[in-house]
Image 1 (cartoon, rainbow, N blue to C red):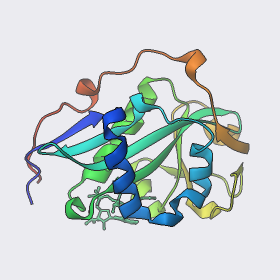
Image 2: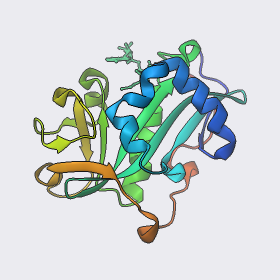
Image 3: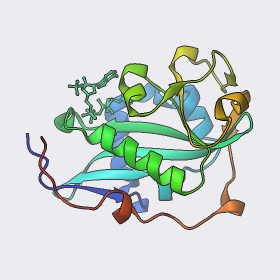
Length: 189
Ligand SMILES: CC(C)(COP(=O)(O)OP(=O)(O)OC[C@H]1O[C@@H](n2cnc3c(N)ncnc32)[C@H](O)[C@@H]1OP(=O)(O)O)[C@@H](O)C(=O)NCCC(=O)NCCS
């Protein structure tokens, strides 16, 4: 299937309702009880690092990033990541992850953390966090806790609690998405 008509945009409030629907479809009603969701409930995600993909104007995928303190690392928690079933296996999930990591790196994040499937995320630059090094506000499978280190000594500093972080005080210029992911339609390989 061709990817003509796909564009990647920074999330704004107008996307909230459709993102809720996409996440409900992907994760079901139990999604609010997951450990990562509990962190996200502690404070807002960072819209400037959160992105959607639209196909001919219809939002069909989303990734969100939430500022966290993870041990001594000022990083971001990636997720939820969800692509509508109609658009799976076209590289959209991978592209959203790539854009979010690059935007976080440019904003000075020290690492992008998530709980997810290693076979999907490790080819995208994620590495396993040391076994049980991070304490989440709920049960997690320690083998699924992953990080893209974006600063020095990240693995050494990823020890202790992970919680939402208020980053307003250190807000810096938001990177231009055009530079990271030019909003061009493109054909799949
Ligand atoms: C997981 C998800 C985001 C992937 O998005 P996508 O746009 O379909 O993925 P991409 O096109 O970038 O990548 C597709 C490849 O990843 C593989 N893949 C998808 N989910 C995977 C998983 N959980 N584990 C390992 N590989 C996976 C596919 O088999 C495919 O492999 P191929 O390229 O060898 O054919 C999407 O399937 C989804 O929304 N799932 C439901 C929600 C979810 O599980 N989110 C992730 C939470 S950790």
